[in-house]
Structure formats: C-alpha cells, structure tokens
Length: 450
Image (tube, rainbow, N blue to C red):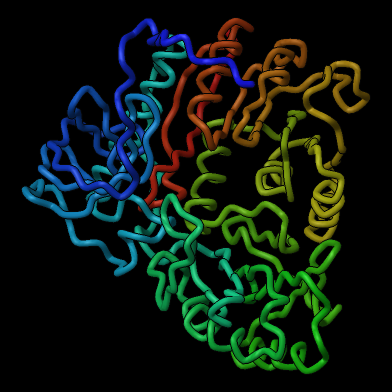
C-alpha cells in the first residue's frame, strides 16, 4: 500500500515559483535596448524579454517562442509604436525565415551593433582596447551569399515535399521563392528547385540540397537512399538547364556526377584560383573575402625574406596570397583532406615555396618538425571555439607579429588576453561584415610583440 501523504509541503527557498509563460502567448512590451545579437530587450512582470525583430524605443506586441526561469524568448508579432530607425525588410520572408535577423535595421546600425559587440567582449573578457580601431570592412548589403543550404522534408501524412529555409527558432520549413541575399546566379536555381524536386519519382530520398556559386554554379543533392536512373536523369537535366554542376552525396563524401567537373573560386586580385568540393569551408561572401585577404596582407606586412606561418589554413585562402610575398610559407590544418587540396591549389598556382602540413592544433607546436626554425609572423583563422592552445605557445614560435581572424568575438577576446600575457600588444582591430543582415560578427586583430 502506498504511504499516505503526511500533509507537509515544501517551497523553494526563493518563495513560490512563478508560472511559466506559455509558448504562443502574446504580450505588449516597451523595448529598452538591444542585446548583442540584435534582439530587443524588454522587462515585464519580473522577467527579461528578448524579442527578435524589435528595435530600441519601440512599443510592440510579442509572441512567446519559449521561456525558462526569468527569461522569455519571443518575436515581434505587431509593431504598436515604431522606431524612426526601422526600415522595411528587403525580403518578404524576413520575419519568419531563420536566415536574416536584422533586415529591419539600417546597415549603418548593424555595423555599429557589431562594432559594439567586439569592443565589449575585448573589454569585458580581456580588459583590452586596441591602439587603433579600423573602419568596418564592408561589401554589398544584398546579393552577396554564394552558398546556401536548402531544407527538404517529406511530409508523409500530407504526401508533400516541403522545400525552403528553416524558420526562426523552429524546425518548420518556410517555402522561399526568392532570397535577396543570394548571389544572382543562384536565384533562378532556387526558384525552380522546389518543383524540380517534387517531380522526382522518389522525392522522399532527398535529405537536403546545397547551392554553390564559384567558377560555375553547383547543386549538391544529399540523398538518404539510392536514386533511380530516371531521377538522376531528371536532376542532371535540371542542372544542365541552369548551367550548373550536379554533385551527389549518399553515404560518403560529395561526388560530382561528371568526374571531369571541378568547382573553384578566384582570388582575382592575386591571379589565384582555389579548387574546392562541397563540404569544404569556403567564405560565403566573395567581395568581403577578397577585401579581408587584402587587409590581412596590409596589416601583417609580410616581407620577401620572411618565413611566415598560417594556422587553420583550410584551402589556402590566406596561404596562397601570403606565399606570393614571402620566402617561405608554412601552412597547417587539422583536416587531412583540406591539407591535400590546399597543397594541390598551391601547386596548380605555381607556388613552390608553400608547404602544407596536417596537425592537431590543440597539441604542443614546438615539437613539430615544421615549427623548427621559428617564424617572423603568424596568421591564424580558427573555428568558433578559437585557438587557446595555439596562442599559449605563440611566444615560443618567435613571431613578432600575429594576425588573428575570428568568427567569434568571445573566443577572440579570451585568446587576446593570453596573447597579452605572452608579451603581445593589441595594435589594431576591426569588424568584417561577412554576413550583412545578420548579427554574426567576424573580426580581425593585429598583435605586435613588445
């Protein structure tokens, strides 16, 4: 028999727990300021609200997306009193699509938000401010993205194939017939793709689709089951009609439908061409990428008699232009397939002074053969989790100058503090607007050994 309840009731030490705000509830708020990710912050009934699509000073009606404790995440449902800074979104899907979160904000304000985020992280986490703030590196606000991932899902109940982009804070797929941030060559492919996929004999086999634009357009079809000859023919005919390469990915790595096909992009200012395959990391914004490489060379100021190190080198985006300027370029990357392609890119571009190595950059560097002899300068472009283990060993490499390219201001700030402890001074820093219309921040920082 179950033991009877003795009647005692215990409360948490903080008092009665407030009921959670239900998802979907609408609530009126005044937005006080913006968070670092561009969401509006409001306060109501003891809770802090983070509202996507809101601007400071606005009165809005928000719809709850989720809540935990005293924090509520929401999106704008209706603007009651608009900020004078608000502008109409360039995309009709901007309010629901998860791709762009700042289209309602003027571009100058987007840049100011990103600059503030970088400055706050450097100040708060490293107590640092550069001797010089560089002007933001910018490109076109729209029509810049040369790569896109298209979500595809078979709705078995409705017997329907959903094609589009993921909704904000949701797994729902939003049908997109136009995407203003895509480069122009991909626009007609995006518009025609949903119908082409729905005409397949077995659309259920499609996992997702990726679009690429470089020396040619390419369509990567990820399939979860073998495709019939008829469906392969339909996909090839679709790609041929749009002058695009067809790539396929089943269990293994992506493969071109025609083995003779090659995908590449140019660094035109240096007369370079870099081959890549779907799945490789490539900067999505070609104009800003070229400006970023040019700025990196300008800040790092490599000399003809120097030996320079490029860490997290990828396909050679920085390494190949650097190799044109220096006596010897040593480039290191953790992914073996990327090292192989980077070396092939160097050979194809006639750069015999560039040497590529695969290494786990979380391990000590000084013991590696390629690290012997030291370096005049180091460039590093790590992933979002930064390069803490690398910068802890920077002084041992002997570099007088270190250029850090970052996609995460928080880890850049953390690593900057370590570089300062290693005897480096933060001489210059600035943001790179690689992803306009979003809150994503890329940054560049130059450190000089004192």
